[in-house]
Amino acid sequence: MTDAAYPGIFVTGTDTEIGKTVCSCLLIEALQQRGLRVAGMKPVASGGQYRQGQLVNPYVFELPVAPHLAARQAGVIIRPEPIQQAFTRLKTDADQIVVEGVGGWRVPLAEDFSVSDLPPLLNLPVVLVIGMRLGCLNHALLTIESIEQTGIKLLGWMANYLDPGFDAQQANYRTLESRLDAPCLAQIPYHCEPFTPTQQRELAASINISWL
View 1: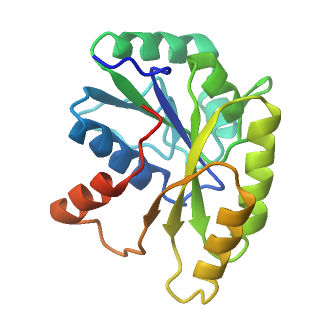
View 2: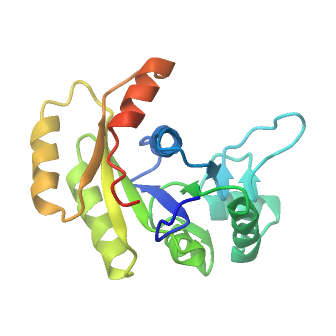
View 3: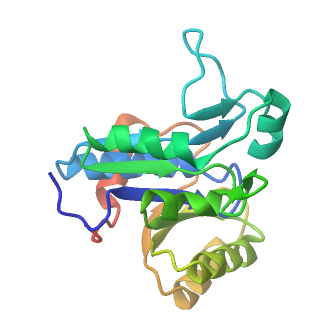
């Protein structure tokens, strides 16, 4: 068992489709490499698919739109209680839980409930995935400003390189490094194909998880 201050981490992003799932999988493997029992959780997902006739996750919707809109289309209201209950069940068999958000940090889940409400609900600090492409500086700085204003602990950020043709990638990285108090936990290289098992292991081993 771990004596970490938190039961897990919450992975959010500067936008949708910027690599939260890739980074969450790498974080899970990084924690497993340190000998921990790790569970993954996606509380809310839209654009889901049936597997063996079922949709998995506390809330998952087939319509690939913002969660509150997908939920409305399905006649569902996303509430905190089922998410908290699922998280509590996972805690019984895991030292750490990696919880992946949906969309960006302020995406609405219901009229009175947003992605940013999930970390305090589950008592989790945040890891921010920054999609390294044109516009990422503004997105990253605004997201971190919002996280800090809510008083939630930001453990660090992960730079996920999305555009191999973007010439200012390293300049943007240095700008973020100089402006952000939280450490960069990892730089994820551009990849148009899934990482091989060897690449996955090596990237996971390089992640800074010194917060444990």
